[in-house]
Every structure is written in structure tokens, then in C-alpha cells.
Image 1 (tube, rainbow, N blue to C red):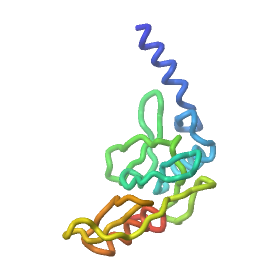
Image 2 (cartoon, rainbow, N blue to C red):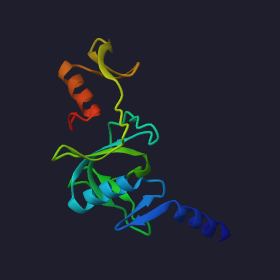
Image 3 (cartoon, rainbow, N blue to C red):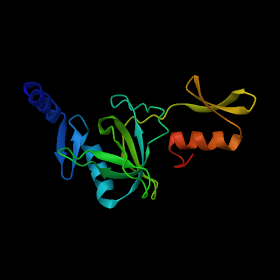
Length: 164
């Protein structure tokens, strides 16, 4: 029982209640405000995760769009709910957010001062059935059958489009 209590104290110290949601203790106040506003307004979001010191985005393409929900239990952490028909979603890494966009208005609710999506570009694919490649900085990250798919993917990853 001693171990359970000690673990609970450490666990509690990692979260901070801000109105309706519990956020990681290292989450920036502006990020907390953006997520709380999106939760209150039921806004559909696009989230970028990355290095909060440099503003460099991680190349995340999955589980980055949806509405904010909240978990049940003692700590009601923000969840990203993919669609209205979804039965739950994953917890948001709120302390790693570097940009949050409202998909309807196409405006940023929060944007790190040095936000950098990276250098995305078209390159030749390595497979004959997927001749259109996409590179981030110096590495190939995706390959597509059609050029339009590669164009849409790059626009999504840079925040110029909200669907791949």
C-alpha cells in the first residue's frame, strides 16, 4: 500500500487543473487556454507536436485532427476525438504542442513563436508503383502513386491544408 500512495503523489504532481481539464504541469499557459477554448467551443482542431524549446515540428500525421474531449476519472485530461461518431480518443501530449489551428476558420489558436514545420519537398519515389516521394529535410518519409497525393500530403504537414 505504501507504494501505491507514493506513486499517486508523484502522479498528482504532474497535472494541473485549469477550469475543466487537467494539463501536464509543463504545458504553456497559452496552450492550455487554446485547448480549453477549443473544448468549450467544440472546435475541430489540427494539432502539431514538436520541440517546445525550438519550435521544430515532429512529422506527425495521425491522431492530430479532431475535437477536444476529456477523460473520465480523477484526472480529466484532454483527449483528441477524431469524429462525432468516435467512442473516445487518445490523450493529447499537451506539453509538446507547438501549434493549434481551428480547422473551420483556418486560424491558429496557438502558434509557437519559432514554429517550423520543416523543409518538405517532392522527390522521386523508390518503388515503381509509388513514383512520387516526399522528403522532410533530407529523409524520404512517404511515397505515393499520384503526384496530387504527394502535393496534398505536403500541404497537410505544413498546415496549408487540413486533409491529406
